[in-house]
Length: 423
Image (cartoon, rainbow, N blue to C red):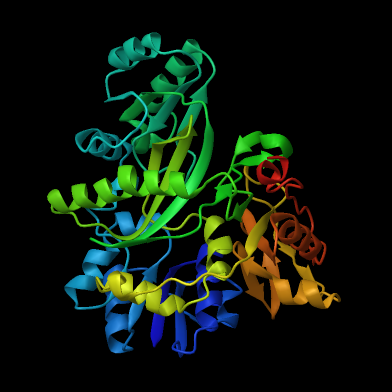
């Protein structure tokens, strides 16, 4: 099987690592990939999606996997399917569950899927009136895609109104913020649940928790994610069943009823309040860095999993998981997330401990290659992943692997998975 992966981050690298272990996979292409993905396959410098579909057709690509949200919201799946190509991901219409916060919230309301009280508006006075009716904190969301940074949690009504004004005026987030969602703040704990869907059937992967804040103890600004772990002990069989019956099933049924069958990854951001799942948001692709911890937990064929979802055949796929825990620690560049940093050469030590060597790996993201040397050139540079029989063991191994990575200005959190280890 020849596979094309669209994307360039740690998420796409981790998918390729899992596929490399699959005997059914003969060749992997990346569009565009990064400075390290060419160790796993071949990078393709084609940006135009029509031309990329031509490449897939000409090179007999059996399956294309879309990693990031931007190609999905731009309709890459529709383009590939119009050529008769097999591609894993939602259509442009279905991708509105992520690309438009307004669409998502209204969809939840139409299908009685539990979510926070809200209004959506482009009218500042209406937003202000709703803000005055809420208790603080108050959540303000930009409608469009903002690279995971379009949510403001305001601690006062004045701060909420200022955030709304800045978004609606275009000062903050540009066009993406000119329509907003204002919603109540929910007090509970967050979970990330991933369902692979084929339009009708679905398979749920182990629930994960990520760490959005830059610094230890959840301090500092929001980021794309500084680490994650799975499975989380903060979920049980009863909660999984509630999520399936109250969220996933009505979502897939609702999308079918609206003639937008959902295929791909449904990433559900949940707040658990008094044992009840409430939807914060949907994404329509794997989270990054959650993907880096989920891929190594899958024991059965990963290529078959993606192919079955892309060909509406999940009912005949049996998911097998390793009885392990995974923890990943993201290493970022010096000035992340405030501004870009100077390129820095990455030096890697080979682990001396056989257990570390066998139970850890690195997923590369913001890196480039020059004269056979790797350089840190992006914000989130790489993720060190550890596996273990317990969260503690997996965490210890991930941090030991971090000690083998060196580049100027590297920064990372030292408390990944603290929620699980304190519980």
